[in-house]
Amino acid sequence: MKYEPVIGLEVHAEMQTRSKMFCACAVVDNTLAAPNSAVCPVCAGMPGTLPVVNERAVEFALRVALALECTVNPVSVFARKNYFYPDLPKGYQISQYEEPLAVNGRLVIKTSAGEKTIRVRRVHLEEDTGKLTHVDGGSLLDLNRAGVSLLEIVSEPDIRSAEEAVAYGEALRHILRYLEVNSGDMEKGVIRFEANISVRPAGTDELNTRSEVKNLNSFRALERSILFETERQSKIVEAGGTVEQETLGWSEAKEQTYSQRSKEDAHDYRYFPEPDLPPLKVSEAWLTRVRGELPELPRTKATRFISQYGLTDYDAARLIEERVFADYYEQAANRQSKIENPKLIANWLLGDVFSALNTRGETLTRSTVRPEALGELVSLVAGGEINQATGKIVLAEMFESGRGAAEIVESQGLKQVSDESLIREMVSQALAENPKEVESYRAGKLGVANFLFGAAMKKAAGKANPQVVRAELEKQLAS
Ligand code: ADP
Ligand code: MG
Ligand code: ZN
Image (tube, rainbow, N blue to C red; front, top):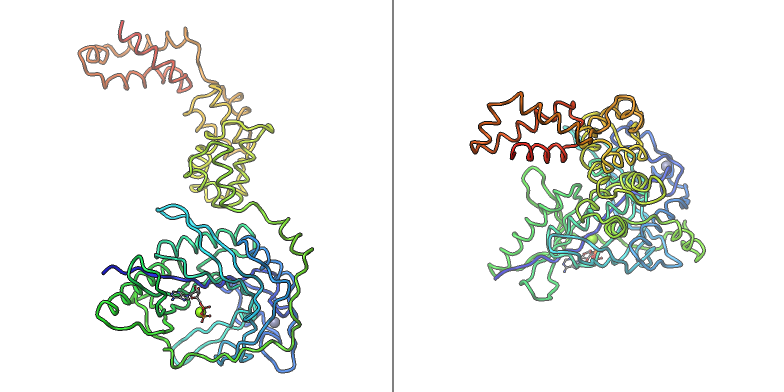
């Protein structure tokens, strides 16, 4: 029998505000800051301290909730989730439990099979834990991360493959970055996944016992662990056994899941409302303002780029990867407050400009070539003022000097030669200088035409209009 996985994802995303969720400590880059350099009595869990909600963190969370089309609860409640662990100095984590910030959202994902909607069950705010590093002879504790605001986004079990799970994770990461609430730097651990996985005979709608794989820090780990679990559970069911409800870890080295705890030793978190915090109220006015300030989201932008600029799915997808790419593109394509050469500009941007940035180790934002300048360059090529090859030379010069395209063409005399009588002269010279090649062409070696074309182009130092040269060459060779 064929089994299919049923997957629900819990995604933890840091809300990258300046200060932590319940205290004034800075949110620092954990890969750079000295351990325990951003800690105070509140996030260190000292008795007698009191938490204060970071309004900005709530606002960031609202952006996400609205972008995921959730219903935001006018009142939500912080609760204590009690458990003992060395990275949790208070002995409890402040989270939202029965009354979360928002519920019933959706996220549209795109896979090789097309688009699919994954329902979002809930979105709630909590605080991150500290970070333990296990070394020879003990463990090191860094509390810089303790108390950083964390958003948990829980999906319904609508995901049916590792590919869909990765697409969901990527779409969510994309939105978080567009909303400017999270850097998306997976290698810094600012987004982490937990995958709930069960299996069932393909095509049925059973919801069977699931396992939960904790702390997946990369898309690769997410994908591999789901493939592994699907296989492992399918084999158990195939052999007539039953899957145990378990919490699993993922071993990167062995590419296997391993048991962390079974149902018997599942935590009883003894949730109760946090007595030190009032219920969190979100007014209609606040929601309206946040909704009004949401940026255009990736999927909407892609659809618009395709229809407004006539781009392919592929080009639109690449342009919307980063907001700065999309903005740059639009400025270049609307240089004179009307749309000009949109497809050509996409080609130049995604091709020559990106590769130049790559080799120069520059970013688009700090590049000397401004969008208007790229638009100008492309319009010179499109209008036949310069040919494609000259365009590349001009672009390189633009990167070097920061000067405008027209200015470079003018000062270096790069204007394309389209004058037919001039080209006629160049072609006949090229043929006269290469009599052997002309002879072998006429004897049937048609490939020689490319050599003769090159020779003719050289006569105008590469600036001749290649179409006109090609046509003239054919004419003279035929006569
Ligand atoms: P908990 O809070 O104990 O983790 P939830 O019921 O909130 O449990 O579910 C957490 C996640 O598990 C959700 O993403 C949900 O979609 C997923 N899930 C629930 N039941 C199943 C199942 N049978 N198979 C796979 N995933 C499931
Ligand atoms: Mg869970
Ligand atoms: Zn603090």
